[in-house]
Length: 481
Image 1 (cartoon, helix red, strand yellow):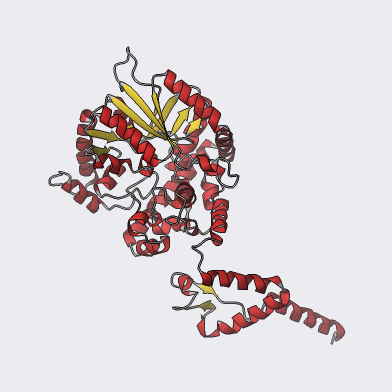
Image 2: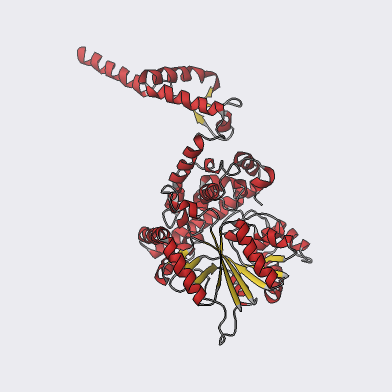
């Protein structure tokens, strides 16, 4: 369950809490700076990065525009390779499909690889309600599972944890005499997770891409745990967002260059696993059964929406988080949803329409850095503006805010009104002005001035100054002496 669903707080309230956490802010800033720098180096070395971005955009735009065709082709080829396909219209149906397989196999232990879409449907909680043990095998996901938290970053889910906190979590999970040395912590996690790999009844993964021409599921990982999860248990369940399809392996080659460079600044991903159906008779490893759960959960609603269709192009690299000035200050949990950052501020309100996440589009400076960072050129800043526009006439808008905007419209409709209002504002700011800035601990400006400077209106407007300068020029011309 999301943080927002638990306490019903707003993104502003959660942000205020995050801003008090000095370690969180320092850790997020340090890590995102490092990822940005590594990305810059990797893309510079590749060369012609804008051409790669445009090619990525074209592939995703073409695929999403013809999603019905490519999804059907993927399904047909996956079935021909021996996979079982389950379609799910929402999170409840997806969970039911997974639970159906788990119950049929009488499974007691499920080993999971990192999967944002499985977080989206809260499958861990659903399984635990049925007394099925679930273990996350990605190191970062394992840490936040022990902490009973959501990921705070799409790529680095435990970005907000100190080594001391991790040591305490591992100690509670059975670690003895653990210090904060990274090697000791990793050794403990490796030992615990290897037991899970060897004893799990079912392995569950997400899906970075599904290749339509072969029905293959493609997984990108850096730790190798997805290979273990998908190969050692007798049953493998893949939870896949319906938009994650690519037409061909040639298109996969483009994404294999875009995604790791954008996500972590790597030239190539450490492990790229291509899974086509379950194990064949002549093969020595792999699952006996492969189940692919294809999830809609609000995605199809965006296909016919010209303003938001491009959000389905996302390849979940997390690059937009690393450059977002809002995310870099408040971290991921302040968004209250599985998907944080600019992509979360757009995607979450679209997938989960209603009041709970309607305020997320306000968690943005609209600077456009997310668009510049996105490897497939998703115009997230335009979508954030569109979502704000849609919400402007809704029930969340306060009467005072509506009245303020009506007053703004009246004032700016006529030049005379505008000049009158600015003169009045210049007089009203006098008691609050100090060294060229407005300082206010009360009233409507408090939300701004609590954390940043609000520049005061200039003593003289440009129009007044220009008129005075013209008068001075006339005076000089008429009286050259």
